[in-house]
Every structure is written in C-alpha cells, then in structure tokens.
Length: 389
Image (tube, rainbow, N blue to C red; front, side, top):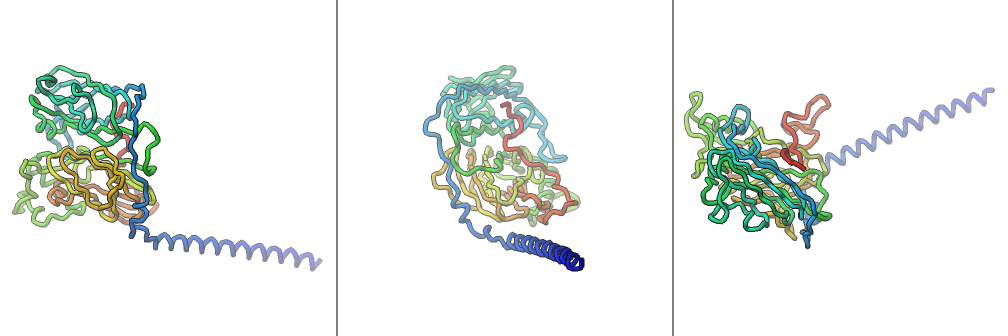
C-alpha cells in the first residue's frame, strides 16, 4: 500500500515539476523573443529594401471589354482644409480633390463632365495616352465646355500608373480653377499579374496650392508647430500682440499646401504595421517643387510619371516637380511615429507635413497600452472615396 501511494506521489511531483519547467522555458522564450525584437537592427540597413523586386510594365495591353463610367460635376464649393479653416473654391462632385478614378489597363473609360460653374472648363487626362480629340485641352478644335453644358470623354485606359486630371487650355482659367480645388487622381492598375512586391497598403496623395487669409494661415502654422515643425521667427505673426512676419507666401501667392485637400494634422495619417511593405503614390498639381522627406527610413522610387523604374532608386528625400507623379515604397521596419514632410520648410510650416504611424504607437511616438486609443485620424483607404467601381 505504501509503495503504491509513494508511486502516485512521485508521479504527481514529477508532473508538477515538468509543468513548472515548461512554464519557465516558455517564459524564457518570450523574454528572448522580446529581447530580440528590442534589439532588431534591420532598420539600420537598406539591404532588404534593395532586395525587393521592381515593378514591371505590361508588354501588350488588350481590351478588357469592360466599360467604366464616371460622372464629374464641376461646381463652386466651400472647401474645408482643416477644422475652422475653409475657403470658397471649386470641386468635382462636391469634393476636392475630386473622386479618384481607378480603372484597369484596357478598360474603356467613359467620363461625363457636367459644368455647373459660371465659366468655361474642361478636363485634361494628365499623363494618359488618349486620342487627340479626348485630350481635354480646349482649343479651336476642341472648344471648352460652357456653363450649363456637358461633354463625354471616352478612351481606352493606357499603361498602369499614377496620373491626374484637371482643367487645361485656352479659353479656360485653368490655373485659377486648379488653385481653387478643381483636380483629382487617376490610377490605372495592371491588367495581368503585377510585378513587384505584394503591398500591404497602397496610399495616394495629391499636393495642391492655396491662398488663405493671414488669420487662417497663422492658424495653420500654429498647428504645424504643435505637430513638431519648428519655424522660429516664422511662427511670429500679427495676432495676439505678437510681432514679426509669418512664413511668407511664395511668389505665386500661395501660403498653404493642401494634401488631399487638407493641411497639417487634418491630413489622414499613413498607418502601417511593422514588417509591412507600403506603397505611397505622390502627385503634385501645384506650381512649386516639393522635396518630400521621410524620417526614420528610406524609400525606393519605383515609378515616375506612371513609368516603372527597372532599377529603383533609394533615397529619403524625393523631389516632386510641378505636374509630376512619383510612386515610392518602403519596408516598415522602424516603429514609431515619423514625419513625412516637404523639406522646403516654409511649405512644411504651411501645412505640407504628414505622419507615418506604426500600429501600437501613440501619436507622440510612445508604445501604446491596452487602455489607449488609436488616435483621432483615420487611415486613407487604398481605393479612395468617390470610386464607382
């Protein structure tokens, strides 16, 4: 009887010891895993970024026999750049930028433009290969669309890439209409299996120019100061007894640089998760150069004006010329909250600054606890509002 009892007790003790040992091993593994993550230094090198495959171009674009139809209505609109900051402008479909038109190579694109402005307008398909009569540049051959009139443009979608649409040509106040918000993004996806990395997220941003009142411009600059941009004397203005000058308007009179129609903290955050490969499409509809600089990590320039680069270029400051589109990607391997801003710092102080925020980090760059929220700003969807397919 005693030996039987002792045998059962021994088994109990051995089992308990095994459970404790396994728990210790598991805890040790977690600690080692955490230590490894904490000491992950892959962000110090661009080896993994350089190893990513390049985008590829479709050799022969075939008709998909699919028709993608859109209606763009140009009209006057009240344009909100940030909380408490709005201007009288223009918009397509009551939004600025207008809806992103997204199609596939070889689709038949049919866009009806309705002019509810008090002046002539048109739509130019910036960077697309379209028939001459569909180019949208008003001329004696292709007259502008008069107030109260409409026109339907139809063409087959050319090669994949990031493009724009906007008014253009003689007889149209194209600069004035663009400055007041009349423009949008046009994205064409490849019809076959796309080359390049598999992207976890695909963001698109279009940069414009705007002219605000002194009071509104000062509000933007104060917000940018809170966001982490420092302007020194530029932050001194003519409000509240302060003296000095604000960050000056440029030679064309712009004193704000909206991104997707918003400035500063009103611009949607670029949300990412560690380890993801992220694509960002940049388009510049403004009349100034913007030197977009990302803190904390490098990017690859993978396409310029819709044309994929066989040998992507690595950099951390991308020069975006007027009328140009540039696509970049990066590996999210350096957690935190990082600025992505124009390095013409007057432009940054005038609202041209975004943030890249890693999942699990607060807006001040601190690791997030379970009790803390995800912040106030929302992720921009890869397929942006206004799409109709």
